[in-house]
Image (tube, rainbow, N blue to C red; front, side, top):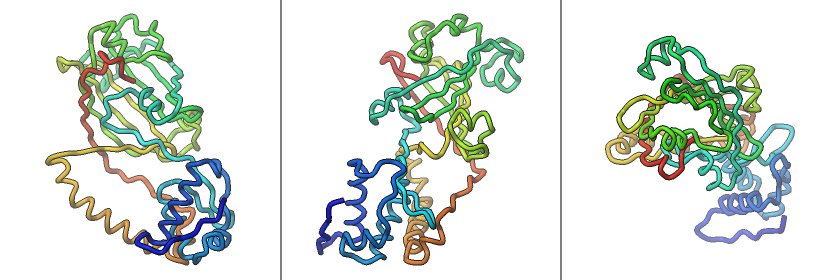
Length: 304
């Protein structure tokens, strides 16, 4: 890494170091998994104190760009893929916009009897036939989502013949059956992955993840699909944008986040950062309810 001269001025030294290190990571100077130089070597490189370097590294660690491990060093992490939870574009389009190559693999496709809960969600009789589809969605070689969906077999008798590894399920619903998805109601819950789920998602059994459970509706308000989606936390994070009253309702939460961020910065001072290494946040038991409206997706060839 070329020597970088810190410049006196309005930008703090630790932030200049942070910006330069982040640019080096983005430019591929260090690949994912590489260990960056030790703190003392970086301090000599930048001509600054160890405290300045540690603050810059702590900022990058909070952004999941670096992983700091006591006794081993600091390593470059794969950046998490930000997904808009209420986005109206398809998974494939969203990945392509972020520079990733999307892949879909159909793991299971069969006819089965609807459970009472699925039947209630789909407004059909318990025991009625439903089409069960399980798909693994990836960005490049990285598995991001494990989707399990059920649809009434009577409404979509030829669904098992559709090519859902290369085509869109929602496009099939709109074009083939004139049932475009207009609204999706989802709950989000923290869970731990079972052995099979973890294996498919390239995670460790018992790893924390998010479970998205939802029902998709057509333009007439009829339920079309009930879904369960497992999302490992290591590779993804979700963006939710609110406006109006919903946004004002977050004011207190954002104030609390400011306090947490301030305390976190204090905790990254010398002596504190090392004591925090190797720790991870435990999932809470709070559920978040999100309602998203997706208009005209099928007409544009969009959908999962």
